[in-house]
Amino acid sequence: MPVRPPRLVVIGGGPGGNQAATAAARLGADVTIVERDVIGGAAHLWDCIPSKAMIATGNAMSFMHRSHGMGLGELTAAVDVDALKRRIADIEEHLNRSVVDLLTSQGVTIVRGTGRLLDAHTVAVDTGGAGNGDVHVEADMIVLSTGTRPRIPPWAKPDGDRILSTRQAYPPSAIPEHLIVVGSGVTGVEFVHMFRSFGSRVSLIVSRQQVLPDRDPEVAAALEEDFLRRGVTLLKGARAEAIEREGEGVAVKCDDGRVARGSHALLAIGSVPNSDGLGLEAAGVEVDERGFIPISDHCQSNVKHIYVAGDLSGKVPLSSVAAMQGRKIAEHAMGLHTRQHRHLDYDKAAQAIFTEPEIAEVGVHEAEAFALGRKIRVTKVPFAANAKALVNDDPRGFVKILSDPYTGVVLGGSIVGSHAAELISVVALAVTAGLRLGDLMDSLLVHPTLSESLADAAD
Image: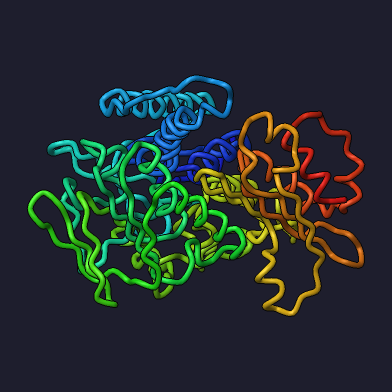
């Protein structure tokens, strides 16, 4: 008798879920993926792609504002909100179609609806059809990839009009006259850059003494300097505790008595996992105190055939990490890794912040290394010394590389400047592969390019 292929059911079609589905299908699994919104997940629908599309538009406007440095006359532009919405929708539709085509080409069954676990081997899907009831799918292995949603504190009530969550701002119905951003992490500073580029006045509530509190202080200082140069107001050491409507505007009240007033307020203060309503208890899956699902090196929950990918795992909340988790899950579930192998090293995940200038980091941070008493070598080169940066009339920022002082092995790096998110890939490769400074120095790079600063920093 023919052997039945293993059945894998994925709940959540984000980067982790669809990567697990396609990889497992290629390896011979019978795969079903359950998604209630857009295949591609929140990254395509609400978060990464819409925000980066808006940032790209803002960057184009920002370039026009400083075009005189390129020998051009004055250029002006205004945001067409309706055109921007169509642009975002077109990008989302194209990406969704590409992912769906890939899944179907691999024989993956797509079920539209909300999935939950009935037990450790059965997934029920609410398809929303009148009178149709739930669809039940039996599984040998299950992948949970339901992501997170914006955290809304009890003292704030987004109304989609003047008080916005991040998912109500892609884009808002009108460009704010004066936006108050609450939260100075990655998402918050990207919104500051985006709307300042659109011409909004922007105030940023910074609960600590620097923006990006978990990042290299020198990197944070470079971003703060650029924000101040562009007229952004920073309220440092202020923790928001209430947001109220005041006529056609808002007032954000802080715990130190300061009040920030503007036309709109935007909440960007973290996220919470979408683990409620998943039926985890019925399947015996454990969660931590925050609602995330702890995982093993193989991305397994405490129930070994139930895997977790993406933000729900509580690891580094990046689409790239989720996709890699999905691939590793498929390989392990299909028996490719029955023994120990090279696991995901989350400390070596490259990260980028799409402000202006861009920020990108990977591996060890300088301040973190010194705090731990770790000996490192730090080399730094400003883009002001780079020919291509001068040609582009954008010499802001620097390249910083951290290495082992004895072996020369590259341990990490930070880049602030134009195209930092692209340039960090070289440093990430060096960190992952254990390359040495000499390997970067001996690379014959194109001239003139920004990447030459990588070799210069390694010298």
